[in-house]
Length: 179
Image (cartoon, rainbow, N blue to C red):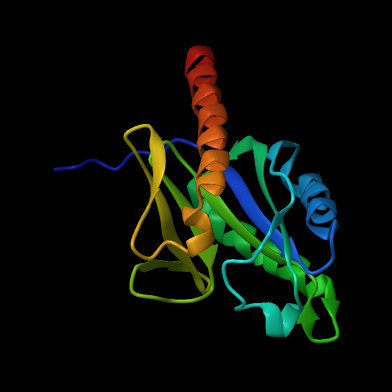
């Protein structure tokens, strides 16, 4: 019999992209007012593995990945996604988003993104939000799954998340030392 127990806190991460160069970084700093200081921010990247958002948002799209210093409880992912959706709504240009914010949680074993879209590999959480298992950590690195978005399979993106995981593991060691 398995006995329920509380999970470890996790690292809050997000992907932000926009047709407005510089807006992802600006929005990342704005999110830090809600979620605390960032401890990692990627260089500016082109969001160019799909044109799925081009009709709504325009082209090209500029992206940043971020992680926040403060660890969160995994169940907070639902409220975080709802909040980031509200931030997107506050920055509409007409009926189009000027920024897309995709939050996720990173643990020692996995990267999970939050989404409002159901699919075969996504698990319903609550309030219309699903968990999308995106990357697994095995043999010293994050690894994509058959359904992983093409951009998250990119070695540069995986390297970013490996670095975030290193920070996270150090935070867990420090937390355990202090407990």
